[in-house]
Image (tube, rainbow, N blue to C red; front, side, top):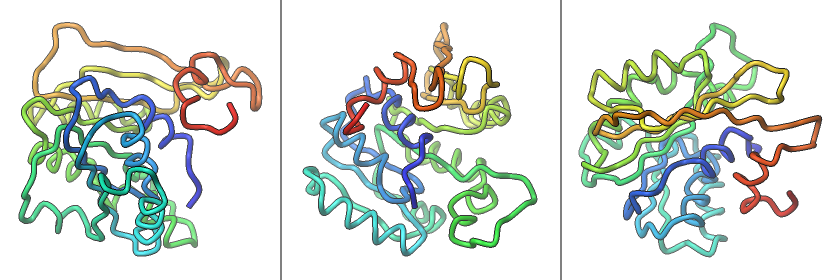
Length: 220
């Protein structure tokens, strides 16, 4: 599977100011989020969770070929199986979850598995974060902007509160399409809300996007 802009945004944007020791990447795909967090932080335990066999195998291969192999581990399991007997709490839980909740499905079942929300409902993801997040941990996701309010409300039901929101637009003239959201167990008096525009013109990136992602691209 190709590396998508959503994953790059989340991996680069995700707050790590709590200096996480342990990280969980739910729905790791090819492992890009785990690898980006390994590059950005000193976390010593970075666990990735991936249910699709082909993606799992590619994730393991990517981990083995990275400079951070000793800090990375990928589980081949679904979220329900993983949380059945939880052994650890995590200081950072990060996920680029499947989010197409529409009825339409393509003819590519593997891509559908990665992309459709019925494989990993938001409620299940949030319940897992509530179960596995450490006291001072951060839970970070990227979701469609249209789902932002519902996701924040669902998190509030388990006392996970938004601490940072960045809304993403493809260009200055296009609507907001994504929301980057970070949550903690402690509700802050001031919520940080920003907007990020990716491109000025096709393949001409804004200074904000370049500043955020330049450490992860060979050419930027």
